[in-house]
Length: 109
Image (tube, rainbow, N blue to C red):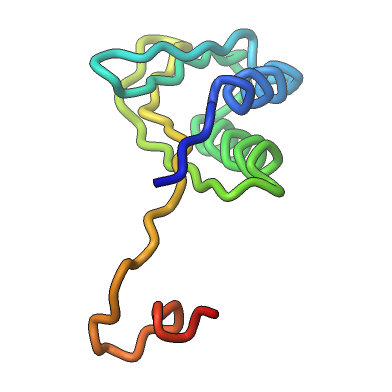
């Protein structure tokens, strides 16, 4: 199993988010082991624009690492939007299932 300290990734991600003009603040909190992203918007920024920024910043911080990200909208209170956002190491297959998958374990060195 691969273990990776995600704290520096989160710090870079939050820093990149807050550099965007339409975002007035951003922070994350883990609740019951699940990371939640809290973002306060400027009134002129739409939710769709924010989600594009989140995706762009996520890609920027995981580039070169073996990570993926997932963002799921949870709720909105005025200009505060809450997302369930996580960075994770993808699981690898441990055996051949016989379905001729492109990432089959039989094809690895």
